Each structure stands twice: as structure tokens, then as C-alpha cells.
Amino acid sequence: MIQDKLLFAVLILGGTGGEIAVTYGMKVTGEPSELRPVAVLKFLGRAICSGWFWLGVPLMATSFYALLVLLSWKPVSYVIPMSAMSYVVGTLGAKYILGEDVTAARWMGVCLVCAGVAIVAVG
Amino acid sequence: MGHERRLRIKTLLVVLTMVLCADIGDILLKRGMTQVGAVQLTWPGLVQAFHLTIFNGMIWTGIFFLAAFLASYMTVLSWADYSYVMPAGAFGYALLALLAVVFLHESVSPKRWLGVMLICVGVLLVGQTKPRTTGEARA
Image (tube, rainbow over all chains, first blue to last red; front, top):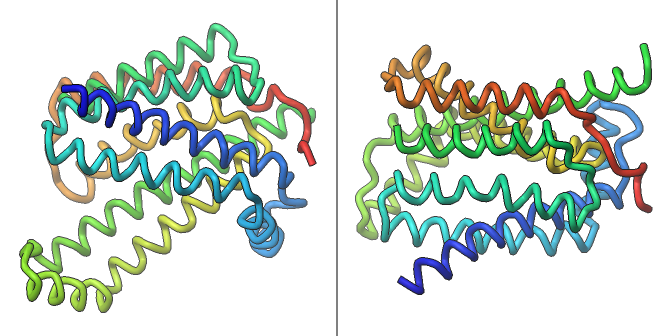
């Protein structure tokens, strides 16, 4: 029981923590000069040299591993709706760590998406 | 066209590319793995599946689309908010349900359609907000 909770924490915190680190890395890298293949490839080359990117990747990999283990223990209709909490936790991280302005409309949208993903998984 | 409007259109186009690439990649992987057949969880079974997988064009095309998904995801995050891209990306679940019905001839339950509808309304709400609320690049 405690193992389940710990793994859900790793799944949600690892996944959102990893994505927040990658987001920060992309912001530090700066956007591509234009949306053409060469400029985007140059941007991706700069982006993967960022330390934030390499902090995010293992966190996301750990989260994915936790997902695989949880799926081997519990039914998918339980694991995926629980993992939809990532949308709420990710939005909290975006607000308090990345300093994004999360308006009421965005919160409402995130909550609807979270509920929708949970229902799709159960349905 | 105003800067804000251009930013919104650019963000939505890249998010749509991201979602399309992820869904097409998933569907191609599913088709490719169906061609490979059920993988036996024994050493010879895994070796045989590995050989069949690396010579399957459908799987490589799927991997190409998933790489394009990652590239567009990283690109859009370089200017747009994470709290904008993350829920907007969930539109992929809705699109996947449609693609599964059209291309894989799977049936989707009414409950799942309800979930898809909630996701679409949620994505529409998030789509109304500003794609970028933080400053320019932090370099």
C-alpha cells in the first residue's frame, strides 16, 4: 500500500518535475530564429547541450519506469486516471516554479482535461 | 496581424503538429506491432521479435513521427507556457479516439466519448488564454 503511494508520487512528481526542467531548459536556450527545418535542428542541437534537459530526461525516465511497475501491479483503469493528476501538479509547478500566470480560465481548462483523461481511461 | 495573434497562431500550429505526430506515431507503432505479432516473453521469442521489429518499415515510420513529436514539443516549450502546452497536448487523446475509429476500426464507448468531450472543452478553454505569460528567453 505504501509502495503504491510512493510509486504514484514518483510517477507524478518525476514526470512533471522532468517536464518542468526541460521547459526551463528550452526557455534558457531561447526559441528558434524561424520555424524552418535548419533553424529548428540548430535549436534542438543547442537545447540538448542544456544541463536542464539532461536533468529532465532521467526524471521522466524514472517516472515512466514507475508507470510500467504500477501497470504490472494495478489495472490500467486505476493507474491512468490517477496519473491524470499530473495535469494539476504540473500546473502548480508551472505557476510556482516557472512563474507562469495561471488564470481562472486556464485552471478550469486543466481541471476539465484532467477529468476527461480520467474518464477516457476508465471508459 | 498583431504580435499576440501571431504568437497564438504559431503556438497552436506547433501544438497541432505535436499532437498529430504523436497520434500518427502511436497508430503506426500499433499497426507495425500487429504485423510483428504477439511477442513471446522468452529469450528466443524476444530475439525474433527484435529482428522482425527492426526490419519493419511501419515501425520505423512510427519512430520518425514520435521523434518529430519530441522535436515540436521541445520547440513550442521554448516560447510557450508549460501550463498552456501540457493541457493543449491532451487534445491528442480526443484525436486518437477519432483516428482509432477511422483507421483501426475500433469501437469507442459512450463514456469514452464523454471524456473526449470534456478534454475538448478543457483544451478550448486553455486555448483562449495567453500562450506566453512569462518574459522572453532567460539566457
